[in-house]
Image (cartoon, rainbow, N blue to C red; front, side, top):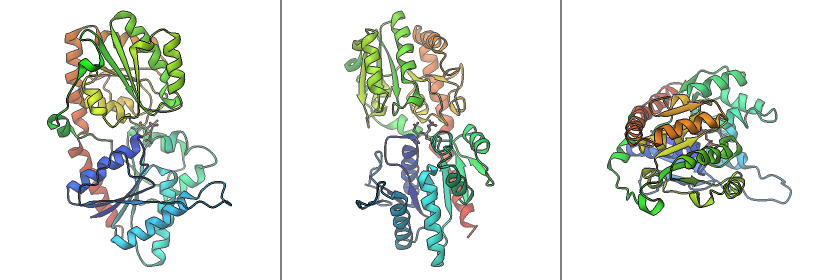
Length: 375
Ligand code: GMT
């Protein structure tokens, strides 16, 4: 099949999932065309089945806001025609499903029919899409997609609750390449990061308010009162500066390392002992799954789709959003005992195996095939 993928090219989970899906499809000999405004961060263009088409938005002084969806839909029309694309798969409803729908309609005028699969990722539904300024357009583009998928049952339930949806939503969970973890060499240089007796606690995100970064600092503050420990904070976003300030005020600045964005997530997770994800909202929690496949247990909130990934008492523990005390106690329980930590590490990996890429990618291929029968 020839598949066009539209996604955000940045460090966010939706872009990562779209990129990994495209790479997996290319390895299965499908021809994959990424269409976005920048080369996706995890995209390696060395596979001859992978193509990248950049969307450029010419600036014009009259425009206060540059019309990205217009440029995207035009680029989609050109690319779909030029490469005879069979399927259009858009990740994140805003504005991708909207631009995709416009492209479909323009192509239909020329007698070209391309089914559109829309994958809902989370904030496009629960945070941004639900805003009254966007809601009618988001509802319209979901209902006018040929196939709609959501990355968790929780997100499907939220979508049906928040929008007037007439379309069936298929749950296709996010995935991870377990074989990559088993075979790839990672130079796990733990001693560069911490002393042998220190436990390493990690958080990775885009440092937005929804991640409750302040809770992470509080949980770590409690942990380090009980044992020698280091906190590794990976990512960039508006909550980074306040968190650095809070670490200073609490007198733990020397025990916390802020890395900024990193492409070396596996290297960081390979020497981590515990992952913290106390988010206010989370449709899935791909970062938790990435931790688990690296044998890192997860202390998280029970928000959204996280309980579908982090198995309470097995791969880690879940608590109510904001229950910093319980999260701290559970973290300490796992970290203070070598045998307990090792047990949680093994079980985190076993839980991650349920989301192996080889189990999930065929689900997308089946959906593409069924969408093609709609032509
Ligand atoms: O978490 C974010 O703020 C980034 C956001 C995105 O759109 O990239 O992540 C969403 O999609 C990920 C991939 O499906 C999910 O794993 C995240 O849970 C989800 N984030 C939220 O729902 C807050």
